[in-house]
Amino acid sequence: MRTDLVSEPGDPNRPNEDFAGVGLPASGQGGCVIVLDGVTPPRGATGCLHSVPWFTARLGGALTELTVSGRDLTLPDILSRAIERTAEAHAATCELSHPRTPQATVALARWSPDTVEYLVLSDSALLLRGPDGTVTPVLDDRMARLPRSALATDALVDATLRNKEGGFFTAAADPSVAARAVAGTLPRREVCALAALTDGATRWTEKFHEGDWRALFELVAKEGARSLVDRVRELETTDRETRTFLRRSKTHDDATVVYVEL
View 1 (cartoon, rainbow, N blue to C red):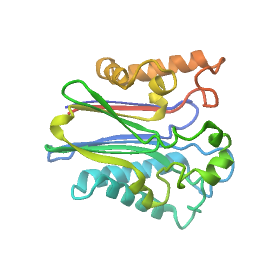
View 2: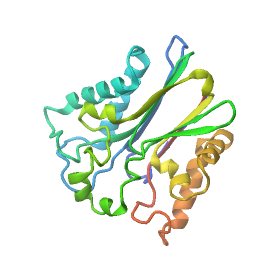
View 3: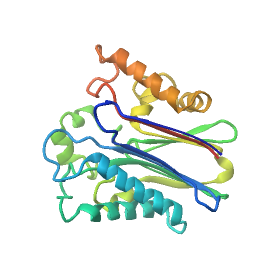
């Protein structure tokens, strides 16, 4: 098995809000990948005493432990329990019902000798490559389907779209959102490699249109996760003045790539 992981903050002066982990049980039977992209809140109250990195570290740690040890649980069950466990860690001190309470997107995969399970919530991505070279993206595209006007202001997003019907869902404090994730199971023989990425890395395809998902996957497989992140940084820097591709987006975003050959 080959693994390759890179996680880099968008700003070296700010903490990385992404989380990435690879779990390989001591039994040697299977493993898992967890990638979280912490949602940076706009300036103002969040109802929480804790930072986004605090939240993603605890949610990521819970997901890693449950995914490795809870073989009898489905991935939606695991996400639900991890969200509940994380919420309990700060429910006594924080207003978890606040729409800007710390939260994250999720890309999660688990494999055994027989199956590959997957789960994606919000705009992180999971790419699965088959033995014939076909790359299948697993995406939760609810945010991408929203009209641009609906995302015009943070207040509007908080009030009408975030973790609401007709909008999009993230892992925050409500365990029930796990049922909203894109999830499924494939035979192990149909997946020979996978990649999990936050949207700071998928910009290469989704924002800058440098290549499709298969081209992105081949770049990571051949040149490594670092090469993809470096190329994204170059494109972001070039676009800094013209804002041709990023428009309202921040110039540099936290970028995480995890690649695994099964």
